[in-house]
Length: 278
Image 1 (cartoon, rainbow, N blue to C red):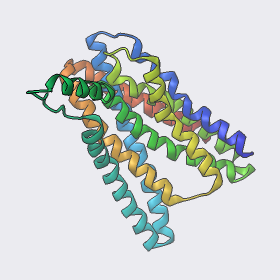
Image 2: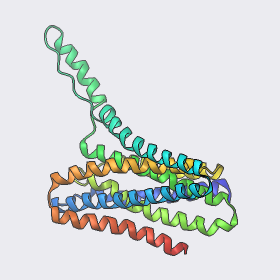
Image 3: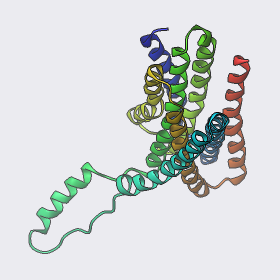
Image 4: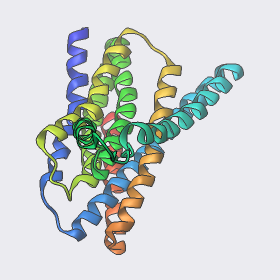
């Protein structure tokens, strides 16, 4: 399969994330909001489990070939987890939460206030729901980059991998639908614009296409482990943010139902991928 066709399959697998995004505009009730928020946590919990499992399998395989290489991949996994989580902490503090400076007083205050007001309008802090959704999209995007690498490497491997290639495309495409649903959890009370949903879809699904194109060009276990670890670290941070939002929403019993539903939905799509590939 050629590069262009492979890139097209990567785009299909990645941009199915848009299928799950429109639910954010459905204006649900408070109870449904609590369930959707918890379902997002369930999807992300499964993704964290799946990501760490896949990365660990690659580390274990490397240990079987070379102890030094395996230890190096293990350290890369630990570093990626740390950077993935802590970098989002820093990003949130510096870029997404800007503190407002006090308004000036005294002579010329009105002119200064007008200038500051215009500047603030251009760099207004993101609303909390949008901020959390953006962080979810970033974490999922890192994960999807690794998915894209797998698609590209399967296409590059030759005809004996063609069945695996189609399984990966279909499976990752189904998974991305649930991931799109996961992004919507914090946004269901805000009725986000289609433009915002488009941005979030590109951030979350676009890396699948980028990873596919790079994976077709070269194979690197280290790159795969690194991006899986970065994604896992980012997802840990986002789960904490969603839990904080869930406590404000209340409806603890319904939230537990939503948590279980989200986890089983993500798990079910993963098992479907496994069955189709067997």
